[in-house]
Length: 361
Image: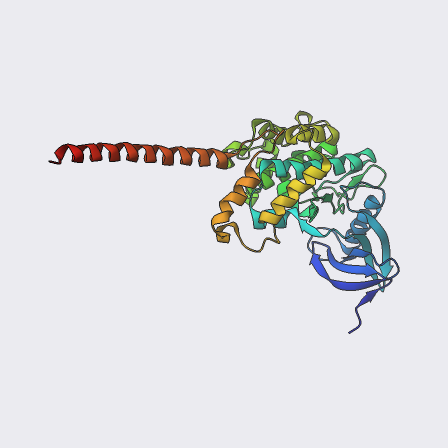
């Protein structure tokens, strides 16, 4: 059967759908290039009418068109076809970060910091041209099979050259990832995106959303008051400097956060290891995806006797980087216990033999 065609593109298969769009994998007929075709779909009840939702959709294409950075998905085209609006985007062969954590659980601290570093670098490029993302969350970050990190979905981005789409009394964004100042009705600025990176890091490190146990009626109060469970009480083994970085990102007062995405990126790079190349960082993410990501054939529980060895390799600290490797320490402790038992047994065996010799005629 002939493939469905949308203007110059042949549709391959659906990729997914979100709040106001469905995404298709397609191929450009002339360039033979795979693309992610994002089609506008209006869904009532989101607060906007159809015209406003369509404007937000167009704004995403316009925002991305102004950006050129390896940590941001590339926009190829914005067009209308048979009364439907489309954005043709770079196709990222990989997974969104929410899907990765849902399958793999919490990531090792260095993997989490590497991913956050990619997000911070993308935000740095956006902020330089006056674009504030305002919806930084795991579902809006793609991780490719080659370990690349790509920030996407600028649908509610606020730009200094475009009119804000936020109406009086209407908060636009995903509630659990909103910065306190946005909840309070104040305009977003680059520090609001830094708060988003903090929520993302918290989720990837713990496997739990910030304010996960909060009731909806208390959520906004907890956000504005900064009352969340400290990272240390949720997960162990995260270095102190990483915990401090997350706490600074999540400061309720924007003036207490990092002053810019560039400053945050430098702090993350320091945590991961300044001497670690981009290639080595990507390889670290790939190793994590291969062992525990959405494409892993079996769960860790089903991997048999080699599962612990694979886990130890993932969590061990690489040379030249800070961190902790709890599995090797446990292995050494276990070996010491076994050695002590063997020595004790040999000593007891010797005493038994001596006693028997003494009793023999």
